Each structure stands twice: as structure tokens, then as C-alpha cells.
Length: 245
Image (cartoon, rainbow, N blue to C red; front, side, top):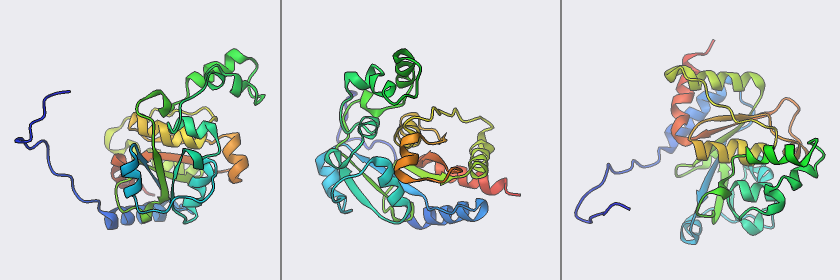
């Protein structure tokens, strides 16, 4: 690590979280593309101290991560730790715990009868974006309606249809003219594709979701999901507004 002196001021002071501005942007997005479900905000905590300082109540009992996101979209908010999570796909993708040889070998994926061979299952597993591959492990997360966020979330998740996802991609491309690099495999749609992937890459991602979250959350057949890292949200919404028709 570079030497850090207490006598030197590094960088610029961080601006306070502009909740009213963010909520107005969420309203703009909802109005222009007709979002029917509200956005969810996800924030990671890597220490017990930071987790405990979050005033959101811890979830009672447990649930798979995708169900937690669904509840947030419906207006609920809570924080959670490893013991509250009931899906090892979610716990590894979010780095709440280390992975296992059964998962990494593809054996677990192969057991779902979605692949022709263990080798195919392993190849797919190797392509899954998962925070467990990085240090440190996550101590806990908070999931809540985006409009309830009082500090900057790491990732914003929306449930969208095909038209709405198209419009959000247009918004993404408006300023840069660069296509998003979509990471989509219909496996671990909520925990990996629209949470871990945007967090790791710093770029928006779109998912057609996966069999597990469709079963657990009973999403509509037309439902897809989009995950947006917070720092891209404002420009994406402005881009969507600029390309409305």
C-alpha cells in the first residue's frame, strides 16, 4: 500500500447521498418506460461494525436472496447475514461464504439435469460471476426499495419486460455509444447476473433470470431483470429520457 500521511488531504470530500434527486430519477424512469415494479437497492457490508451501524432491521428467519429482492420490490426492507440465506448459489455469488468443490466442479449444476455432461456443467459454472472468488468475504447485505435508500446502494435492481430492457440499454448507450457487455446464462439470474456481475464489472447487466428464481418468486413469464451499478444510474436514466418516443 502507498504511504498515507495524516497531514495530506486525499481526493475530494464525498457528497452527501441525494435521496430526493435519486427518487426523482426513479420516478422519471418509471414514468417514461412504464415500470410496474419499484426498484430495489442492494448494499454490501464487509465488517460487523458497518453492518451493525445500518439501522435497517435484520430479516427474521431466512429466505433465498432472490426472494429478499422480490420482497424489497414489494416495499419491504431488511439486512441479512449468512445464516439468513437459504440458497448456496446466492451465498457464494454474494461472498457470504466460500464455495465448495461440489459447486466448482460442476457437480451441483449437473444435478439439475440442465446439462448434457459434468464437463458442460463445469464450463458454465466457471463463467458465473461470483464474489466468493475475491477477498474479503461479505459480512452482510441490506436489500430495500431504492426509494428508501438513505445512503448510496452498490447495485440497483429492476424487474422489467423486454421493451423496458431495450429502453434501458438505449439509455446506457446514449452518452458513450458503446454496447453493454451482457453476461447472461440463465443460471443464478438474480444473485450473479444482476447483483454480483454489476458489482464486479462496474457495468449494467441484463438477465432473463433463471429457473430457480422463477420458481421461488413466481415471476411472470415476460419478466426479466436489470442490475445497474449506482454510479451509472443517473446517466442511464437521462439517456432513457433523451431517447423517449
